[in-house]
Image (cartoon, rainbow, N blue to C red; front, side, top):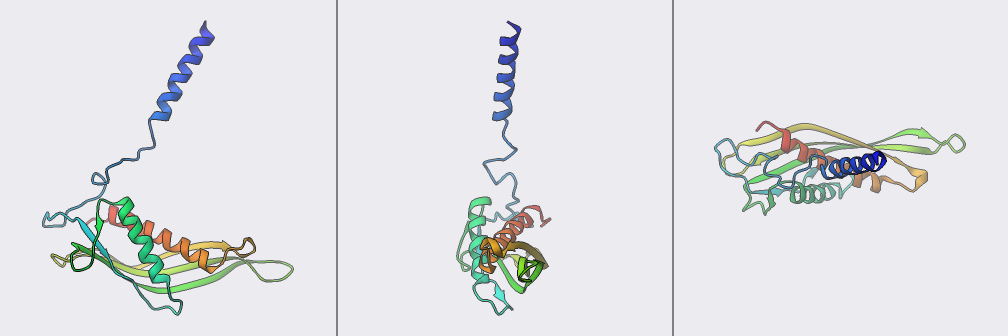
Length: 176
């Protein structure tokens, strides 16, 4: 009988553990501050296409798309056109670097490479002119392995996705 009881207790504990979740909440309003200094509610965000000081084109579009998707899915804000938005995110891609981490011993070709993007961005309340968030230097690096078929395009997608993720985290944690 004790075997059945211990199995039953273990099953109840396991069910409780599985139903506890991981601390995620459904409503983002509880985690994001949604009012400016004047207690005006922020409802909409416009994402401007970032300027680029780089020769490589298209990176600014990748970043704008990744950022827009994250704002829609992970914040209480809605996307809007610049003319109708409460706030605006702007920025400049300052530099893109590629560096070789390791080489193939036989061919001396790059085996593992890094892609680093340096940018600056600003989040501004268009109604009051208040700068909610200003990051003059923001750096993100990802690695990619060429023999596995990864190239700069794959790395740039990952680095822009990671940058947009971190920018949303900044919007969440910044003391504005």
